[in-house]
Amino acid sequence: MSWFQDKYDSFIAYITNPDVWISVALGILKIIFIIAIASVVIRVGRAIIHNAFRINSKSPLQISERRTNTVAKLLQNVITYVVFFLAVIMILGVLGIETKGLLAGAGVIGLAVGFGAQNLVRDVITGFFILLEDQFSVGDYVRLGKFEGVIQEIGLRTTKIKSWTGELHILPNGSIKEVTNFSLSNSVAFVDVSISYESDIDRAEKVIEDLLDELPMKYDKMVKRPELLGVQSLGASEVVLRVVSEVEPMQHFAISRALRKEIKLRLDEHGIEIPYPRMVLYNREEMGSKQVN
Figure 1 (cartoon, rainbow, N blue to C red):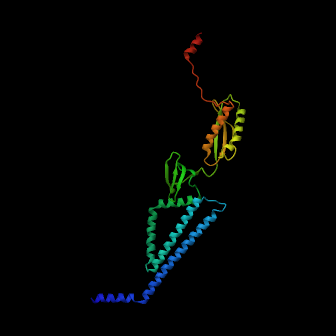
Figure 2 (cartoon, one colour; figure 1 turned 30 degrees about the horizontal axis):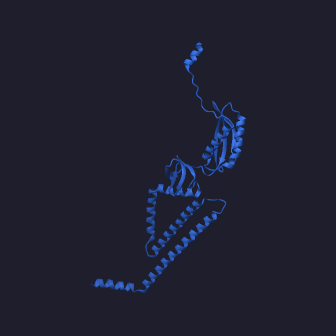
């Protein structure tokens, strides 16, 4: 009973000690101050990043708005995590908790997790550089290794690409070694036109040239007037003329089809024959009877 009484008296003496409450009040004030400073640092850092990217959007070196927002959001989150981590460490120090051992343990655990998640870390780092370097963006037609199609989504860990047949491929960013982007520069549409050997080549070229003068006004996807390069090859039964046209990115398929149609209709109007395979049948009996007569 005396032991319990001693403990009770010690507890009462402790909680009624003014120095204890002064220490607790100072600790609470320090924690509030740390939280307030951390909040201010986070807000200022996020504002600086936002303004920096907004200024960059007005510079001659343009980055797409979606990519700018993604990178800005990523950097803002990094600042938030770092400041919160430092604030927690400082608060633990105020509470009298030894942080050196905690940091050492966190370093060992982080090292172990890093070795176990190398692919994840590689995917995230690669995804960050894909966004930062503007290698491709949503809507671009690209070839990533053996996969080819339209980019549907870009993340820090994976990229989604949809092929023209409808399959959706989800690729870890760390596996992307080679990128071919077909949407960054103008494409070239080319069409080979076959005419028969009996046709007048000069007249056929004149008809095609007149047609090419009209096409840019009809097809706004053409960057400039198509060109007739001339005779491309001499086939078994036809002379092949080649027409090329510089068009907007990824419009070469549609313009190629339109060129074939326009050229075919115009050649038909002027009676210029496009050769086609012919088959001649000989009757051996008839040929034999003719020889006997």
